[in-house]
Image (cartoon, rainbow, N blue to C red):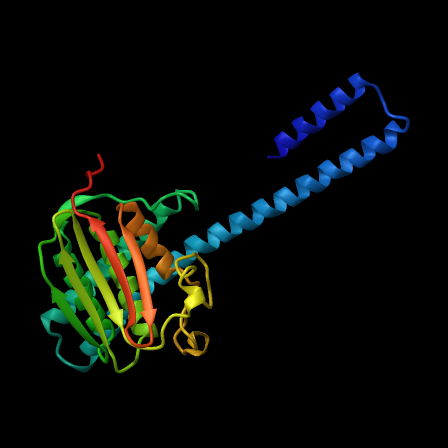
Length: 280
């Protein structure tokens, strides 16, 4: 960028002198150089802010997505401390620890992409339904005082990045628990057709503000969402969860939508092509 401004300065001055000087060439050249210097300073400042924003974004993604499986580990460890360990709890701890390791690797991979690039994914043949059930179980352990409902119909074989799918659902379930009615039910519904798989996460509670619906998937959009979110005791992070969800779905060639009202509650719906090409 600075090199381009230097080339511009040299080219303009060269043309200037070839075309003949003005009555006061020194003052004109001084003003021109001051304008170029100011443009360089403004461009460097904007670039620095953009770079810092990207750094904050990636660090925030890492911290945000580790919080859910880490909470599962802590909760399971407390159960172990109070009673004899059932095998199911031990397995949950292991699975959550593996997810944390996977998230770190994925985010490090993500940092290699530009902020406006796509989320890197690796599709492999698998059953989306089975993967989402595992994540739902982790959330049930993470939030033992919340009620979850599960509905499933259709078949879910296809090409997916299973790690990203777990990341996607974990974020949506965590969002429903955080902003939903404390005594309400969080409902996960899966269905499919010939070409696509679908799932939705629904919760009752205060709806998302209407003017925020169009911006809720933006990165680092703090303070968006439901009324009173700023006063909640649980930290809301940097506002990255739904941005992460959107990018994962986009990378799979799908779509993520949201509807929210006082009467019907809030529903996030994911559509994913089942048989996109597997990356080589």
